[in-house]
Length: 331
Image 1 (tube, helix red, strand yellow):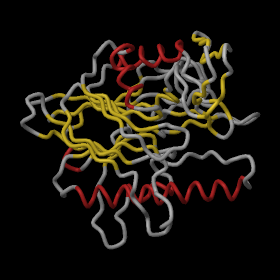
Image 2: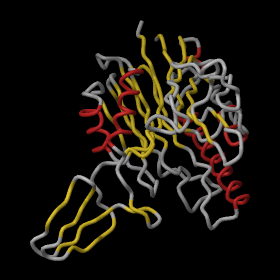
Image 3: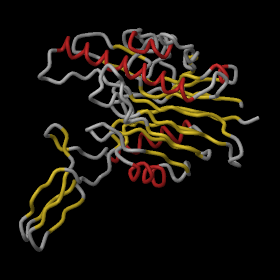
C-alpha cells in the first residue's frame, strides 16, 4: 500500500526578483535600479525590458512573504502539491531548490494564457509521467478565444519505481471575480460567472474524454467559486448526453491545522472549517469560501484517509490570500 498526500496552494503572485517585459531606454553612464537590491550602471546606451500589466510594474514577491509560503509548504509536507500563480518554470525551480531546500525533486510548469504571467505548476516527491497542457482548448460558445484564463494542466503521477501510474492530476485556476474599473459591475460579474461555468464544463468534457469510469484521477486547484455554486455545476452534475465524472468533494470535513479561538464570532471566523479564501468588503461582514478544492474520482473516493487545511494566522493571509488544502490517499 502507498500513502500519498495531494494538495493545492495558490502562491499569490510568485514572481521572480528580475523584471524583463516592457522596454525602457538607459542613457550612457546612467544608473538603473532593477529592484531595491540591484542597481546597474551602463557604459553606453542600451535598452532592456521590464514586466508590466495594465500599465503597472509587476513586482517580485517580497522575500518575507516568499519565506512565509515556503515555511507553510515545508510544514504541511505534502507529497504532490498543485500550485497556482507562479511566473514561470525558472521561478518554480528556484523556489523548489532554494526556498524549499530541494524537498521536491520534480517540478512542472507550462506557461499559459494569463496576461498577468500567473501560471499553473506542480511540485512532487513522486515521479511524473506525461504532462499535457489544455491552454488552447476552445469552447463552441466562445469560438474566437481560448476558454481557459490560465490553463488546465494534466499530469500523471507514478510510483517511486516508475512502474505504475498512481493517478492523473488536473490542476485548475478558473476565472476570477475581478471586474475592471471601466466595466459595469453587474455585467462584469455576469460575464465572469459565465466564463467560469464554461471553463468548468470544458474541464468536465476533457476529463471525461481522457479518463475511463474506473480511472484514478484528481481535479483540484483554485476554482474561484464555492463547490455548490452554479458556475461549478458541470463538475457536480453530468453534462447533457454524458454520464458525468462522478466527482467526490474530498474537502467536506477538513481538519484545520490551527482551529479558530472558540470565543470568536462566526462573522470573524466561521464555524465550518471548509474554507480557504476570505474576502471582506468595506463595512460588510467577511465572506469565507472554499475556493481551493480537491475532487476525486469514484475509484479514489474509498481511498481517502483524511483532509486538512493549513489555517492562516492573519485575516489577510500568511504569504497568500489563500490557504493550502490537502488530502491523504491510501492506494
